[in-house]
Amino acid sequence: MMNRIVFLCALIIMCGNGFAQTMQKDELIFLTSEWKGERFADGRPKVPDELIERAKHIGFESAWTILKNLGYNNQYEGGWKTVNDTVKVTGRVVTAQYMPSRPDVEKNIKDRGKAEGRKGNTNSWPIDVLVKGDVYVADGCGKIAKGTLIGDNLGNSIYAKSGNGVVFDASVRDLTGLSEIKGFNAYVRDFDPSYLEDEVLMGLNTPIRIGHAIVLPGDLVISDREGVIFIPAHLAEKVVYTAEFIDLRDMFGHEMLKKGSFSPGQIDSDWTDEIKTSFLKWLDAHPGSTKLTRAQLDALMSKRTW
Image (tube, rainbow, N blue to C red; front, side):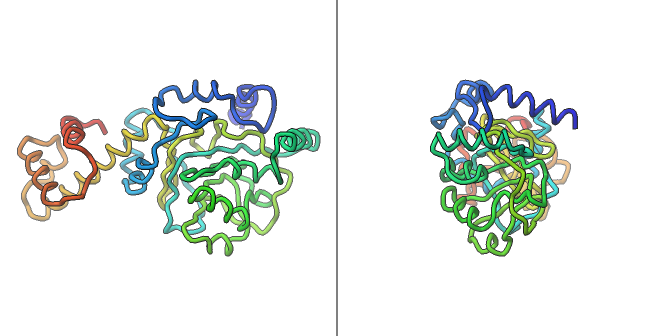
């Protein structure tokens, strides 16, 4: 509990001169300085759409293993309930930090939001900044009753803006209505019929904590039935390409083992030139099986970087 309080206090100080605001652009660029690609106007890393699409098809465990081997040990969180467990949630993160409300603070936040042109309750403000490919990720402190960040009205708005779902360390309401939004999914702690009460947005596009994971704006989130993984933007390409190679390697290995072409020890060890040649021939016989270039394949086969 003390660690969480320290984290939130540091977050408030870091975000500048007030509450419920986006992080200053320079600070966000500083925290995500390893990202060298395009950014949104507010400084959030803009992982390319093409890479997001490829990320939808990579192995979940492969991505987790790659991150762990790179020393990123706090990027996974499980223990979710979902609106539709057949729909994966994959995209660029927009973060929101909610905290228990108190009248004076909430009044100041809403007054300033109104002056800035923000409309509605604070839980709708993150929705206003969403664009296609975004995923709304919120820390609601795990609150269930009266912690319902959205219902089916806001869910429809989220999907219309982003074409995506949400990840909430909190709850949602209107499960039936949410489940009728084709293509939408929500990873949440639970469902509850109550309205959101005594909860206020304290940070928009600031670093947040989701269970055991640290999440920054612009991270690439991927999901599966096990849970969600938050991939730092600067590692998105490496994780996706490497995971694609691991998945290909597994497909090839399974086929070779079934045919008896190689032994398990050969397939599971560093590959010999003979196996590498067989793998490349196998790829030629399966056109369209990968978007990796020959140079990328050669680099990935040269040593275990995963």
